[in-house]
Length: 313
Length: 269
Image 1 (cartoon, chains in turn yellow, red):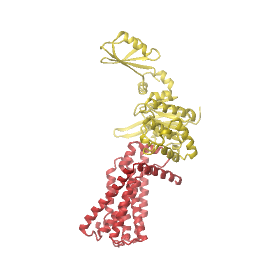
Image 2 (cartoon, chains in turn brown, green; image 1 turned 60 degrees about the vertical axis):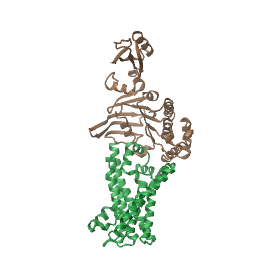
Image 3 (cartoon, one colour; image 1 turned 135 degrees about the horizontal axis):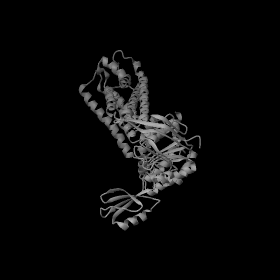
Image 4 (tube, chains in turn brown, yellow; image 1 turned 45 degrees about the vertical axis):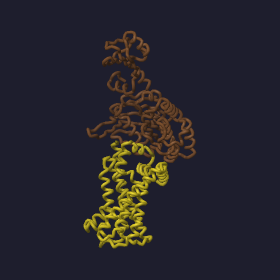
């Protein structure tokens, strides 16, 4: 393996003092990220995701342990690291809100000391890939969420960072905008070799983009491996939620009754054993059904199940 | 740092351009900031008229002090308004400050340049107009030396106020609820500086000259501007001491700011 990882984290801890006593947001985690990896970083709210990202980007000082990004200690060499790292927070803007979009790009160019010719060349490419041309003269505050997210990405990668930290970049976006963001990130990672750390709740983002997935819960890394392995191990269980016409016991071949509440039944079944269509057909053959929905397992569900020790990793 | 100056100028220019995109809003803010000064000065003039003089100072002379203080405050707030406790808490609360920390610039330079508030230029100009008007009524014959003293008073007082704001901002990173205490400091201090210090008696006078350097920054140079004799034992060269005192305030403010950031990075929000 490459002897020089882009990110090295060893025994990393962060304790916060709160009114209810000390809380260990990150409770000793270790990992390395090699150049060009696309890592999904998931976990329930408050699991320690953003605290880890903040320690990697120099916003927070670790309580213990070691973190190095691009060979630098983030909090000690914050400004120097900032030149080689990009950060996009999905719900905040780093663009100049009241000014036309093109002025943000110009300012980023100056901030990161990108030579004008270089900036023009990179911008031309980004404008094409992200379809920004018509937006350049529009004030940022007038952009739609999807347009703004494309612009945020362009601004973040304009300085050609080696590492890109993304926090919920597709949150609130419609299907089309999500696809545009994902296509862009995939190409960026493949063509420029940019290392990407993606924090998200969206399992879809992770399965479509990430070669590797890390799951954190209660400050500990509880999964670090390929998305494939996780999917085979845990993502195969789907749930059919059924509202029966009458309150009666249900038994369907290929499914397990996971929960019952009034006339509602949760039927778990394995994706590779039976199709939803087949299961529904079997169900309808023996019961009268008022309504039904199909639930795919979400990342938090998987996290919870791994953490509870149901189906060990 | 020199190459950085360009970046901060660009940030400041962007902030001004952003405000200028709403010219009506800008004009209203500008005028209202100026009008507030006008109203407050009118109040002081009316009040002083009843007394005739305070501690041997004629109303017009007092208003000169007042005007210098307003000008200094306007100047300090053009750059320092964003350091007020409520604004800093807002930056922290909305996560904006985290983003500032991911930029390849000094956080202070970024925050100050990005939130230049042109509204306070209105306060500055109104303060300057007040000084000119009151000095005329007080019969001040302007000389380059007196103008220089007035400029010194404004620059030093502004630096002191900026230093205090900076320290308060640093403190805000620790408490995130300093608003009230800071306002008492700024406006309370301002209020004191606006009245001749003789009314405070000789022992307290000494304390205020040193303990409240706003008084030092404006009062002592103003004696020179008005051509007045200071209280006994106050040498004329004391006016120039305003500069190092102001510098010390700015330096202490800078230290407090840095300590605040260290605390913030250590604890996080």
